[in-house]
Image (cartoon, rainbow over all chains, first blue to last red; front, side, top):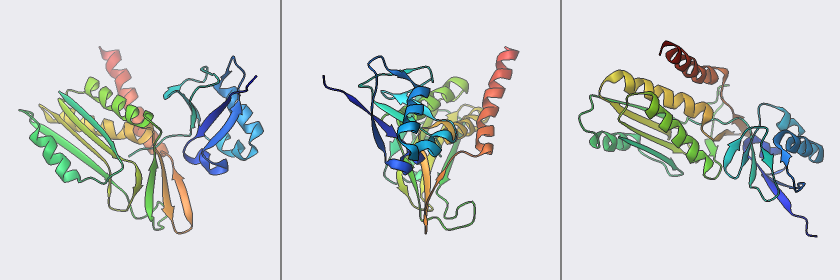
Length: 86
Length: 162
């Protein structure tokens, strides 16, 4: 069976450690946001620092979601460090 | 009523935007505008070569539109115009422009202030300063957060009064 990988886009300073994208295989039933972040910290130790500093928010299919949201294979996923306009 | 929000990679002329905005108005008695410009010096006094603003897909523009929509809901303004740059911005160039119009001055002043406070802390941008020996990410300061929170507090007080 083909395994679908989900690409997670790392925005802002999160991209400094290992580039703007990382690929992950997610369980078909999906994962809540904090679990996705833990897995990323485990698999990409370079991200440890960036993901533990400040509040990280997830964006699924172009909507910023609360932590309880479930990320499923095939979703367009991005992680946002604190934003700053103006 | 009009609420015009624009995200642009190209430089723009705030004076020309204000002139167009003012020309579009009817009988409003008050027009307020604010322009934010890229500084040539960082907080530590070192020279900044450029400011780079990153965005994310449609989410950045949507976040600006939501903030502008909230300003119209909250203040008695009739027109607003918000322009925000993305990409590489040189010192002295405009990063952000906000204009508001209302029948009387208070609403226009407050709405422009509110728009800027929320754009600083909630619009989906990531900002870094490029300098001689690399780049530094700029995140909202404690003061920026405080400036945004005061609107939430005053909204709570208004609701409690009503």
